[in-house]
Image 1 (cartoon, rainbow, N blue to C red):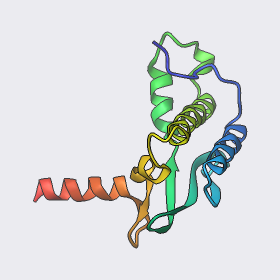
Image 2 (cartoon, helix red, strand yellow):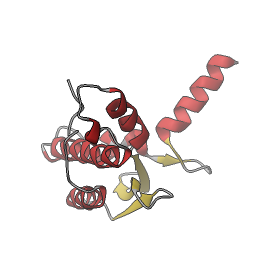
Image 3 (cartoon, rainbow, N blue to C red):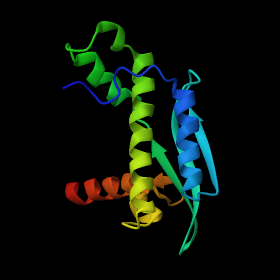
Image 4 (cartoon, one colour):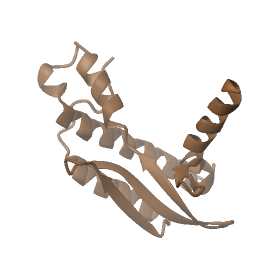
Length: 143
């Protein structure tokens, strides 16, 4: 089965703007789009007021992971197995995920900071909670 949104024609810039609007509806106080060396959007950060104060979150958009899947899926047309397409697809997938998370928040099933917890920026190195956890877990296992 091909990857979700693999045929999209919607630019990553447009989708990044849509993600910002979705987050704004979830009452974040600011958003910031990150760009790679080629000027393509590569991630998005946002600030949210939580019961524990104002916190920063950073959502990655793993274009390279999507590119590897597109590139290796021979059921997908060769014209859709390009890096530029992977950028569009990765952002559409991220948008769908954010939209779904905001929907379950709106339904009262979870709180926004709860669902975004892995992406909470922590520590002096400003890594996500998940990245910090995996580094420490790996270090603990190797010790």
